[in-house]
Length: 298
Image: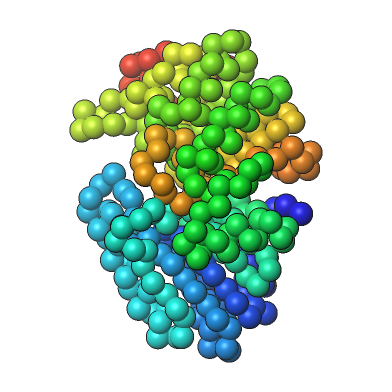
């Protein structure tokens, strides 16, 4: 069964865990670090994998995040955690995955204290596929769950094409890819599409020009707003996608997850989250929006 969870759900599971596998780009949430250390100290087998080279547009920021991961690994090891950085070669560890005994947890961000979307499942097939990821294997699988970026975005694009009703999308970063192509086709056919994009991805280059993908979306009639830390989802009235993959062009076989669901309760919950985020988001700044026609049908 697939359901929404919370940070509290995960912390409670860690409090009784016997075996833990944990992977993410960054791990800066103090309660979670403390819970992993406490689990290891009481005898649980705790394995943590962090990204060696976290991605950031600013090289100085990327270097700082890499240094943070090195420090976190050292601290976790002092408490008995099998903590390591991702290999120098191989897929990046962008997926936010946790396996606590027989339950898998998926986070769309880097496990913050609040504001993220966490999915939980104990379905044997899902758990087995997550376990394979931590073992360094990729099971392409089929259906609702993807565990690599290219496959996750294929699932998201299918929702953008097939879902009925108005379409709502959130992504931290955006670039021309299959998902954006599906959104453009949807908007050009007359469907209402709303998108929330991370404020740091609206601009590109030192001249501060509008991101070409955002410009294309606006020109096609997509309503675009900006938020500091949007989630990653795509939802219509009857079908939804949520994951850790941003709607950007694939670079290598990065580890990302995405789930497509037709569960009425889950679709409704994701749409409610989007509506709250949409209300709090801001229009694209006028000086930037003037570079393109950005629709804002309210």
